[in-house]
Length: 370
Image 1 (spheres, rainbow, N blue to C red):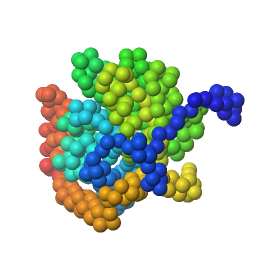
Image 2 (image 1 turned 180 degrees about the horizontal axis):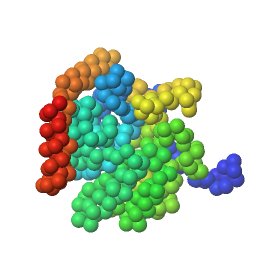
Image 3 (image 1 turned 30 degrees about the vertical axis):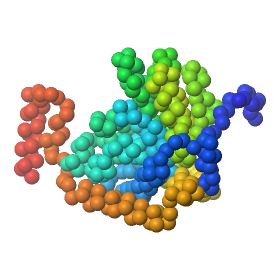
Image 4 (image 1 turned 90 degrees about the vertical axis):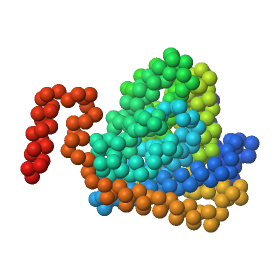
């Protein structure tokens, strides 16, 4: 629908899909078909991600890991969207998708090894926190530059379409990425060639310290899809059922040659942008308090309680189990030594050139002589 905004120009708005209200009340006829055991599993995973976020920031503050990028408040957006995918689909993350990683089956221990950059880290300590990739999970390594993953996701989807593979790519990014050139490049190509791509924007209202209203003149992010010739939808990003339903519809449409979709999941980053950020410098406590009333974890728990499939005893056990998992992963990762010096030279050449071999021998001799 459209209306005239305060500046007198035509503004396009899109309705926000919501199934579960912050109170836990829900619209029964809109509920997706998910078994009770699966609902409880999703909630426990959300709890694991929430507790992991808290512990990881503590580890950084204690000097035990170097850096951390959290996802506090965005658990429903990540887990609900990833749950809509099939194993053969591919994920192109930004740098905050801890929930998506775990939903895709990446072991918590492997993630913790990456946090500690130890010898069992598959990336050998070369990447920032959460910029993790795993081929077996069809999860592409993240990249720190903003929006570079969008053209990659579209290219992979286009290749799948050319091969006739029923594969969908899901790409994550924040609202700040919509101001980057690669957003236009990816969206335009996807629209022209009708690639099986789902663009998933986690609108958490801040690109580090820049609020969304200073990013764009449009009332929503989703409306931008109209310029590229495909559908844009808005969903309550703190409502896991609404996120799942919206993403599932977009994934199914893409898989059946219906083209791409832009999803704007309206959520909120309740923690800092990263362990190097102080959000109190650019947002008020009142704003944070208002969004904490919409906490995705509390909302989903109230929903499960209303359905009579979750109890105080379940909550207590889930908290104990998830914290034990995290404790065990930290304890193991912290005991593993750093990657050896040889790993500086691996994964670059199939066969090391002679001059690199010489550099390697010199460095190894120097290291052994210390």
